[in-house]
Length: 304
View 1 (cartoon, rainbow, N blue to C red):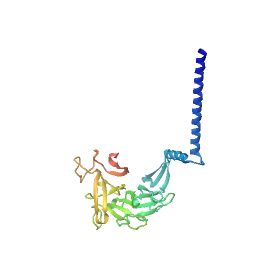
View 2: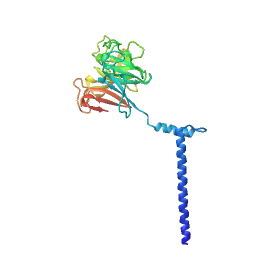
View 3: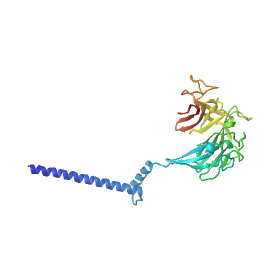
View 4: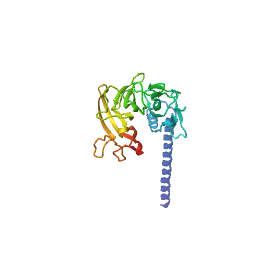
C-alpha cells in the first residue's frame, strides 16, 4: 500500500512537470511568433499579425521635439527629447534686419498645412516670417525687409503673438502696437483687421470684442469654434471674441479670466491682482481641449 502511494505521488509530480514544460514551450512559441511579427515581414494570412504590429506601433513612444524661442539670442532652437543640447533652426547670427537674421523673436506657430514650417514673430523687425524646415532664411508673411514698423495693412508695430486658424489656415497676428488682431493670408499683400481697439488709429470703425476694448493685445489663439482667444495685457484679462462679420464690426465677446472685480462686475482700470479671479500682466495662453491655460506673468504662475 505504501509503495502504491509513493508511485501515485511520483506520477502526479511527473504530470505536473510535463504540464509545466508544455506551458513554457507554448509561451516560447507565442513569444517567437510575436517577435517575428513585429521585427520582420510575414507571408500568407497576416490579418492577426498586422493587428499585433498595429497595436505595438500605437503603444510605442514617438520621438518628441521642442521648439524654443530664444529671444535674447535672436534665434529659434530645436531640442530633441532628453537631448543635452539643442540646434539652431532659425536665426542665430545676432540681431539684424536681413532675412537670415531675427531680432528679438517672441513667438512661433508650427504650420502643419505648410510642410510644418515655423511661423515666427520677429518682434523688433516688426514682421512675421515663415521659416521652412532646413532653410537658412525666412520669407515675409507680413511686414517688410527693412524691419520698419507701420500701421498699414501690410505693416506691423511690435507684434507679439501668432496662431494658425484651424479652419481657414490663415495666419492670425497680435499686432500689439497697433491695437489690433490681423488675419493674414499667404501670398496676399494686405492683411484684414478682424479685431481692433479704441486706440487703433485708423478712420474705419472700431472692431472691438463685443463691448470690450482691445488694448495692446499680447497674444492670440484660435479655438476649435474659430473664436479668437486674446490676451489683453493692458486690462489684465483674457477675452474670447467671436467675430461674425469683420467688415461690419459685428462681434460678441466675454471674459475668460481676469478683468473682473470680486463681485463679478467688469473692471475698467487697475484690474491687476493676485487673487485666483485676477491676473497681473498675462503674457499668453495655450488651448488644452476645452480648457485655457494662462501664463500669468507678474504673478509668476500658470492658471487654468
